[in-house]
Length: 142
Image 1 (spheres, rainbow, N blue to C red):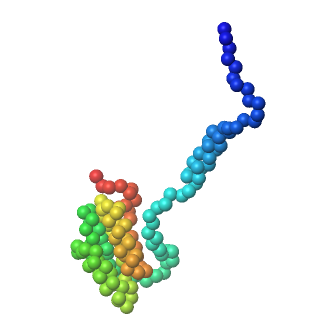
Image 2 (cartoon, rainbow, N blue to C red):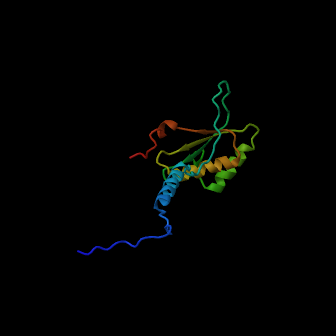
Image 3 (cartoon, helix red, strand yellow):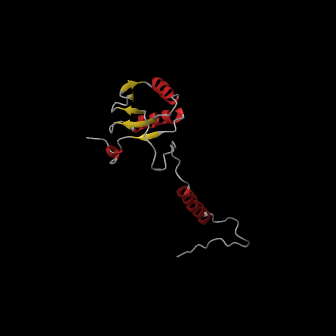
């Protein structure tokens, strides 16, 4: 039975095995991807620190949101420009009123975030979430 022999190399090997190098690079890439935090869209809202002893504000305005994502100003349906002008008129008062955000539990998150952004962009310093007990489950009512 004839046997064939591999050609013998008389000099140094000319090609390099880079498979282990690529494996190490892939592991490092996976570790890098896992350690980079996921970018999120965040709207920062400064909340009061909870110091007691403050007297209640005489004027409270409620910015609402219905289940159909309709914005409300003190119970009246408004569009975004009307809401912005209503907030501006309220902020022009001698004492800044509290703006309470009171969305319907079935209102969409997107509409809620956009409404909060309108309030934040208005420059209001007195902002509060209303009816938090209805949102503690963070699920839509069925």
